[in-house]
Amino acid sequence: MFTRTREEAQTVEWGGGTSDRLLVDADQMGFAVAHTVVRAGSSSKLQYRNHLEACYCIGGSGSVVEKDGTVHDITPGTIYVLNEHDPHELRGGETEDMILVSIFNPAITGEEKHELTEDGYSSY
Image 1 (cartoon, one colour):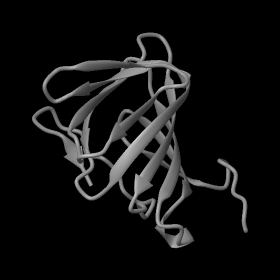
Image 2 (spheres, rainbow, N blue to C red):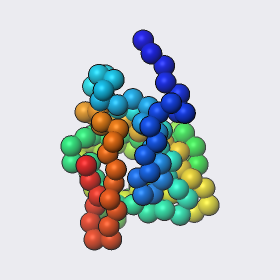
Image 3 (cartoon, rainbow, N blue to C red):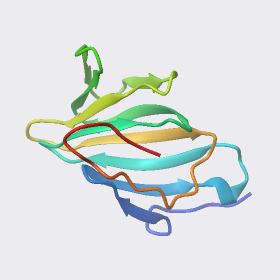
Image 4 (cartoon, one colour):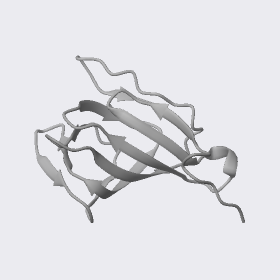
């Protein structure tokens, strides 16, 4: 057994916010956990081609937009699940950050960073 605080975790700036990598591949659990902040007013096109991801909102608000334009409002108590390596656009709230607990399977190393561009979906 072990514990880790957000202050002890590696923080990665990913373009639209931050990700505190609480549990990573080196921890040998088979999945990863991150505390993710999506900045208010931000919009990021993302896709995880090597990982499945589920994100549970614990604070603030925002939305996730499917490639076909379908918008899902995200508020505390809502989970969104990217179960098919789905390209998506992640948007922070208009006036508040969105706070998520992000779960990755298989685990991320913790070093990954998005490279956001206007013309496509950033992936790792």
